[in-house]
Image (cartoon, rainbow, N blue to C red; front, side, top):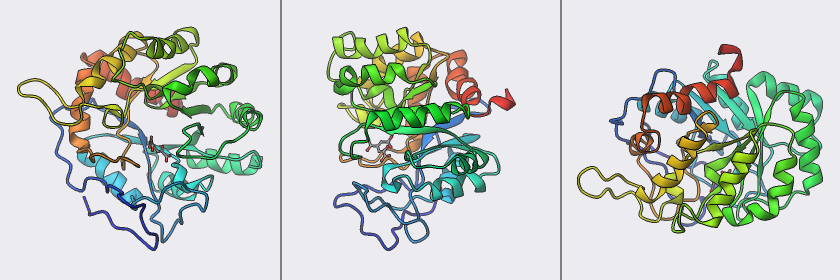
Amino acid sequence: MSKPTTGPFEKTAGWLDWYARPTKPRFKLPTGAVDAHCHVFGPGAEFPYAPERKYTPCDASKAQLFALREHLGFARNVVVQATCHGADNRALVDALQASGGKARGVATVKRSVTDNELQALHAAGVRGVRFNFVKRLVDFTPKDELMEIAARIHQLGWHVVIYFEAVDLPELWDFFTRLPTIVVVDHMGRPDVSKPVDGPEFALFLKFMHEHPNVWSKVSCPERLSVTGPKALDGEQNAYRDVVLFARQVVDSFPDRVLWGTDWPHPNLKDHMPDDGLLVDFIPHIAPTAELQKKLLVNNPMRLYWPEEK
Ligand code: 0GY
């Protein structure tokens, strides 16, 4: 893959660039696997970052994303609008349109979005909107505005992707459980993996999924959640081992409602930048059978993003 570059914008201090030479994964992805959570950033010279952004990333273009897809062995991508582009979905739409049908998208829209604009996003391949509640990433949007957007996109058959921290789930519960669409949680609701997997915080997340069959989860981002980090222990021990029990529990309990994505180009990591090949090698630790892997990587994302092909 080509090396990361930056355009006219100055990256946030301490920014970690994506990994230019990921290893080839040892785990062979099933045919038709979907990377169901990844982003494009700019390039800033072509698609400027939003004035209201909380960080300025290293550029990560559609061509670089598609090269990674080929290198890792994925067939398709779901590109999720990143907060550094605000509600300006041009870079996302450009990537979807250039993908030859191999990418679908999740956009960010404001209450003021017109029906024509929603139709144009649909035509480009958008199938969901993202509501972000992570305070370091976005300013607050009133819940009645979000509910209004949810009702409108429900009519298009889209879903809502939610991103929040585990400690905020109690306060957000009423809003989340009133959403009329399929609701996809990013990164298992960001559990604190230094707490017990059978403790009250993660139990609340599992209850959220148990009681609401419209709730799905991405079991992605071990590199973001892990405290033990990427270093494998000797022998069979894998990287990000403290995340395994959490993700396995979700995959085992809800095999038909889980998705997986690389999260390339991994915004806002402070500690290390993951090798995307090693991230793919993490998958069999959380989905140990061929059947679970096929559901996680092929059947579930295809049902949600390419239902016409199922
Ligand atoms: C992720 C996680 C993060 C950032 C964003 O849209 C974004 O800016 O999603 C994060 O900083 O935790 O899923 O990419």
